[in-house]
Image 1: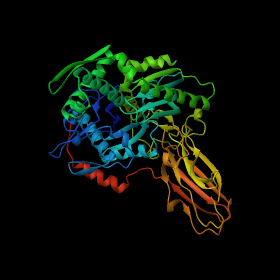
Image 2: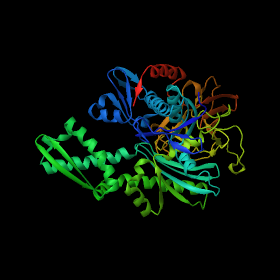
Image 3: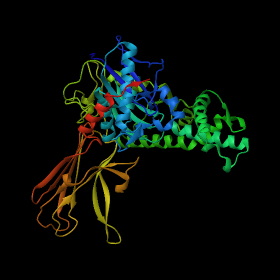
Image 4: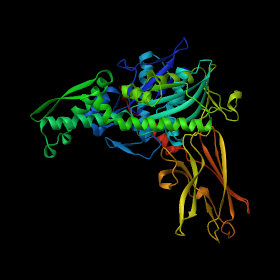
Length: 538
């Protein structure tokens, strides 16, 4: 078994694998058909095998019910799926992709590597990161690190230069958008601020372009709502194939022209780049808004901070409208190798020997601090002698559920955030609350993780992390309204949250660690056995 480590960019629409070669340079491991990236699409064949990649993507068009794509958008969620009479979780689907990526890479290069570093969006919360790690375990791999995608990109592009630079990584992938500000210098990467939208990506631009072509075809062919081709599965299958090619054409040319057929109608439909850009301007505007927001967050942390370089990462960043709109907003963005930087950075991070026993399960934390520049924070380290030091931040705010009296004299629940997105890890925060009612003999304190892009006090907008009996103090003597309750939240350098609640009069307390995954270890074992029995192929 080799001690080498694959760096894997497990993307929403495309994935890539990289390895540090014998000369110490990261290089992309091409797949079975000689491509740098592999579609993150899974097709369940009727013979019991599972097809991954380009062939699966092609087959999905004609048989969508037995195919799965964009599964990354559901990592860390309870989102059961059924194909060919068998049930799968997002972790299991991702495991099938990882299994084939590694199997293909090993086969193409006559290697036997099972150790991997997998990347995740910077704004992924604890559950999503742990779900990604579990996907690797289900695939039968040894996951030696989970690192944020922009950190990996920075390691690949800039981390070995001597002069410190402040970078903004603008990462627009096929299904997610991520923007991160970090400081990079001579093997050190310090994350300053992160922001993003897990439901915004190239797939949304595809949908807009599809709508343009569909509406224009109906208009040219003289079709009305009573004869709508969008209800024809074969027509829509052909349209979606053509639209993806048309989007690529519009990246290079001023217009794209496709031939569409429906019943006795046949029309050449033309869409210009200008029309495409106008139809998707609201999507680009969202990325600009998030970019400005992350800069504001970084400047609030470090007054006077300026960004030295704006780097475009992710395949969808190739669209000319992205760089143009960024320039109009005052951001002079630089092209990179787009969808390959992240995998290369993960490979660099994972190069060399295995980690020390203290290597973090989520986020690759370390037990010592060898860099005076990182203050009290505990950075995480790349593996091996050429390791990269990484200091991370909390991806989403964490708060506890409290109650307050509204203007109508009734109690209402709300989330009080103790820790906020982009605070440097590890961190400790606390508050002193009060008993709600006279005679109260028990106290429950529930922990929530921020659900949206910005904090919301509404419990429905957030994700429950710890609640129920494990966070309840029972058997207290009758309390008076306003008697104090002390709440302390600790978040480790890996992003794992622990809640400590104390009733000071009696000294009674509870300490609970956040549930960091939807799947239990028993679930992981069962899924690993299930996936091991499935033959995958490209």
